[in-house]
Length: 179
Image: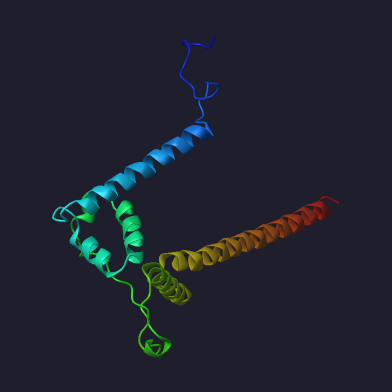
């Protein structure tokens, strides 16, 4: 047994399937229920019914079936009250002749940000090449420091060479004097 006792897991459970006969029976029951409702509406005075549905039934029998399908798809109170959504914008299609290609094109936020980023990068590179940024100043100062260090090292080398030369001359003279 796993630690902590038996946990509820969806795997390995016994599954129950609905047989096709039960599905057919449910479908027939729904159809009967719908047909009974239609009969009640037709036998009624029409006072409690939908006025739009009554008009459609008077106009043509063919559109009545389509309206029934539409009424079944509607939920709750939608069938009773026609509500127009104020925030919903009706999409209109434009013809090619109506399109304004010469007018200014509006950019998306991402496109605007990308353009601003490129412009900022270009400004920075111009300032950098002119030597006005801190990084450019540091980059220009570094070679100057290295140049100074090398000059100092060269001077020390020359002094050491001169000192070595004078020492060797003194040794030679001292050796020549001893003879």
